[in-house]
Length: 340
Image 1 (cartoon, one colour):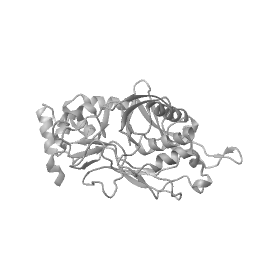
Image 2: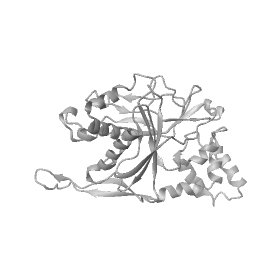
Image 3: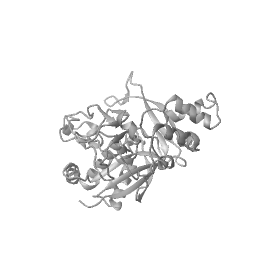
Image 4: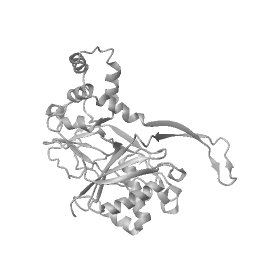
């Protein structure tokens, strides 16, 4: 295969979003766009090309607020280390408690903070110190100001009677965005598609709507695609952090620190209707994936090394698979944490 071309896709949502910007959902949307625009045969060829070569034809990350990356998952910072940072900054622990709690709960960090550790060693205390002393503490809070999550009530419609079904009230959680202040970035590598082809695919997705309830007006966005990816790779990585939801294969390293995400997947496109091809069942079996930010030690890491795969046995239709590749970013974690 040819070398990877790298792209950064910038999204600004103009409608409420019902699904999270996770790599497996993004990949599924790309697949349906391929099927509708290029035909079922091209989609089958695309999917069958995975696993047959050391290089996969397309890798995609989760979506992150512009300028941010997932917070590396490592052992928790100790109370003694926290107190040392607070005291060194001349603060009182009580007055700093809200800031400390916020930093602990962060699941994203600004790129510029992570950049500091890509020429040195990454450890829990150093990362906490950088977040505590940097103005990025407030910039992370601002990243959330442009979005609001709300529980929205819906009625179930009886399609036979054409009226609201008694007892059919249910709720769903939707996220609303301020397009002027909330922008997301997705990173993508491909050896198959040109920039022009990617623009066509994402234009289709933007019109159809991303994720749940696209047919009712959710998930619409404006986008741009730029060549290149600006990610702070470590100079001498001994581990990688995944920027996507990920399931390792039997040959992948599993020693590290991780979070998990439970996936209760639903098929998209025509399959969402429960057509005969999926035996009337639009739902995948539940699976557990490592979340973005999970870190794994690998002394042989290099930028284009492949981790993960397309997972089978997720549906009655044996041809349906689930995207579970890592989008790896090299990091250099202090060695003592490798043996904890």
